[in-house]
Amino acid sequence: AHPQARSGPEHKAVPGVKHLIAVASGKGGVGKSTTTTNLALALASSGARVGVLDADLYGPSQPRMLGLKGMPDSPDGKILEPMIGHGIQTMSIGFLVDEESPIIWRGPMITQALTRLVYETRWDNLDYLIVDLPPGTGDIHLTMAQRLPVSGAVIVTTPQDIALLDARKGLRMFEKVNVPVIGIIENMSTHVCTQCGHEEHIFGEGGAKKMAEEAGTELLGELPLDIRIRTGSDSGQPILVTSPDSSLAAAYQSIATRI
Ligand code: ADP
Image 1: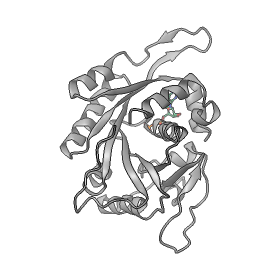
Image 2: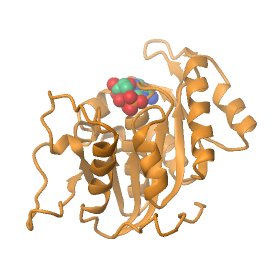
Image 3: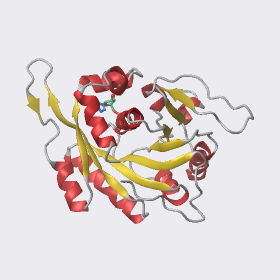
Image 4: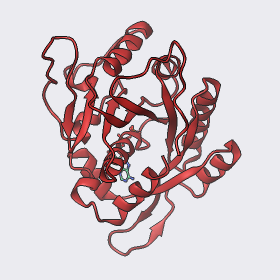
C-alpha cells in the first residue's frame, strides 16, 4: 500500500527501479542501517526484487551489514554494477572509498555523489530500492526529496525522548518537502534478558506510538533490543539470513508487508 512516486521534471525515474523507499532517523545509532538491511531481506523473502542504496555517505555501513567487500565492476568505466549481498543489489560509497578515510565534502559534491550512485548503478529490475539515509536532516535529504522519485519514507526511532524529538523533526522535514511518510518503526523497543526471560523497556515505553498518532501516521512495528540482531548485522550475517524462521525475522517480515 505504498503511495505513488512523485513525479515532475525534476524527479527523473530511476532506470530498473519501481519503488524508491527511504529509511531515515533523527539521530545516529538508533538502528536505522540495521533495520534497512533486515527490511530489505524481509521484502526479498516475500519474493520481491530488492536493492539497497547506502546514502549514508559520511558513515556507510551497508557493505559490512550485507557482508560485502571489494569494488563494484564497471565494464564501461561509467555505469556501476551493484554488488550482491545475500541476494540484495547493493551500492554504497563505502565500496568506492577507503574505509578509514573520512569524507569531507561540501553540499554540491554530496548532491552529485548521491545522484550518481542512484542513476549510474545498473539496478536490475527492482521492485524496491531501499535508501539508507544519514541521520538527521541535511543536504542528502534535500537532494533526495528534490531530485529522486521517492515513493515514501520510513522513520526509525528508539523509544527514548531525545530520539523521538529528533525523529519528529525528521517527520516534519519530509512533510515540508512533500515526501509521504509511510510510518514509524520503533527499534530497541524492549529487551528480553537472555538469562531469565524478563522483559524490560530500557529506553521507555509507548513513545513512538504516541508520536505516530500525533503525526497522523502509522506505527509500522516494534523491534526488540536483541543481541542476535547486533551480532548478525555487525558480522555481515543478518538475522533474516541466519534465522529466517525466528520470531525476530517474523517481526521484520510483518513490518515489510506494511511498506
Ligand atoms: P544507525 O544506522 O541508526 O546509526 P545502526 O544500524 O548502525 O544504527 O545500529 C547501531 C548499533 O546497534 C549496531 O551495532 C547494530 O548492530 C545495533 N543494533 C541495531 N538495532 C538493534 C537491535 N534491535 N538489537 C540489538 N542491536 C541493535
